[in-house]
Length: 161
Length: 249
Image (cartoon, rainbow over all chains, first blue to last red; front, side, top):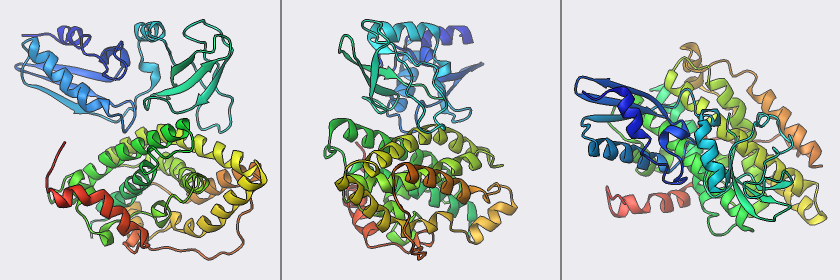
């Protein structure tokens, strides 16, 4: 029988279709893996309510496990506790930076209206002299920034708490 | 009447109809970043709709899926606020509608997180996080336009004058709310209006905007009495499912 540890290892081969350097484990969306006699149950939580990648991740998980010979896999979508960028793994943050996406910084709670935007170092030249272009970027989980020094525009994986 | 089903339609249809309105901006935003922001927010609303109407279908117990509820009801069966079905008009108008709604949605989700129904509490907990981003975005635009040029100020003031009459309905209460309050599904909502007003006053002061004096307010959306605009939205929203039943792509 396959162990839960093995399932977690297999899941490290399933990538986020929108940020393809991150695995579903790096992203922190896999909340639980439960293996019983001849089935496997996985709890998955969405990053944002409307994230169109969730359905795809669910299917990719089932396909990957089937490829590894694990049958009877069920994936359950859970909303609570709600996903936070605190669940991104350290490895995931390093991979994001290498890929050119600034990982989330510790930001003040969004309930404080008009707080200054976070200081986000440029993933290209590491300068802290960057500016927020828009809170909304190429996907729900990203904001759009630009570096004032090297002038490179870049994605910022925004902080969600 | 199934009160929980009714209540879920109310909050689910708000997300559905406003999400649809925002999606109408796709490819038409004044600048690319704004276009992307509005469609991103639209996507959050459609995502909320998916989970809220899924729960509504289960609660109703007649085997209707979230898609059937979204695409196959008639206009009188929708329970959204009149505010969210108002046409986009121009960008300032769209942001004013959004701000008045976001300022209500945030404290509403904070309260609903304490519901004794774990599914509803979970939906609120999830949706609150993205709602904070929405409110921040719409507030910033209200201030920028209100405290901007003479032209932007007069136009955003005009949109506030037009839209204010739809805000009374945000706090509409009837037997549905009363029953759900007794059973603990709805926590105490008494602070909701004051919290909304606090945000609205704070932002309008910074935006140098004046709240209209007329106390007269419209309502009806919560019991299925809509403005003419909803029918046109549904004609577009439902077209594919009506023309090609059960189609998927």
